[in-house]
Length: 226
Ligand code: ADP
Ligand code: 5GP
Image (cartoon, rainbow, N blue to C red; front, top):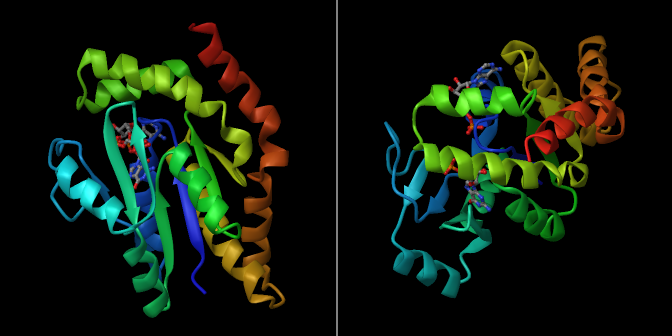
């Protein structure tokens, strides 16, 4: 059985950056390329970051029950995970990583309760705003919408198994890697090696129940801006 990893984060938190780093260091992990009705941004290529489809094509996929989950994100565009990616990962003996929003994560957790869910947080509202601006991909209006959505999304953090604060990129990458590899170790039922025990300890620090104190000031920074 493939392990399904769900990664969610407010836009601009650095999720794509972290996931790219993860794929450089972890093997036997497939990325689920979502379908979306939004327009490609910057250097995005069809079939690489996303499969870009029309609303009509998206609706036809819903009709044919091709999605494991789908949602309307930012009240604007549709995004969905095709069931096919999970079948392919299983056939190839790989695990699968889904980069999806909180609505999609809830749907997947309901269908696959043993999926591992990870919520990535920026260090604070100010840093998130700076990262969104600095990325230079969105209009001011879009940045405002994303910051507003971020505040609402962050309130869902406690539905996730692991919380990762992306402050220093290198540390956050190590933590994400530790979460992924430690879940493999845990599910193998084997006695962990010394190296694996270190991964388990790092991952343990990111478990929801350990992360609450780190999350509180971040939540406050978003609520103060209201
Ligand atoms: P997301 O996929 O969550 O929308 P991105 O990966 O596109 O976010 O990152 C948003 C911006 O923040 C990018 O310009 C990226 O280079 C930058 N970034 C990512 N992680 C960090 C970090 N730890 N510190 C500073 N900047 C970061
Ligand atoms: P972006 O437009 O910045 O690439 O993504 C916007 C949001 O849509 C992100 O939170 C991303 O995780 C989410 N998203 C991407 N693909 C999917 C998907 O297949 N399903 C759901 N529910 N959300 C997705």
